[in-house]
Length: 200
Image (cartoon, rainbow, N blue to C red):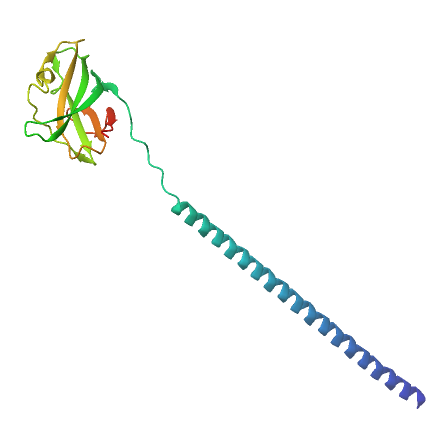
């Protein structure tokens, strides 16, 4: 009888001990899973914060770049050069005058060298344009005692050079004037020679 009681007691103790061990293992497993989930959640939050910070810094950088003023190329200041590959032109000087109607105008002096193999005249070989306040100035009509316009139409033999004057109406007598020289038929819009004159 005693053996049976001892045997039953041993079985009960084994069951109790096994239950405690399983409970402890289950608690440990649950704790480890919770720790793992918390770690993953913390890592995800850290990654989101890092991504948000990077995006914010990128936006700030882009905003800074966009807010900076764009640099613009300075206007060319090439007083002399070759036009159409065969005419050398130099923008020499300028002076103020008045046209036949007593309106202000500017007289531009050019040097023209004909390097072609045929006779050529300044006005029929190259194109000149004058701007003030970004608006083109019209050709001015000048009295002959103020400016001689004939040389600009005179034929020049190959290798010859001539100095010519051309007059242009002004919009005012204060703002700068830009003089440009390009091919007579300038389909590309390229400017070969440019000079800016300050009036005041």
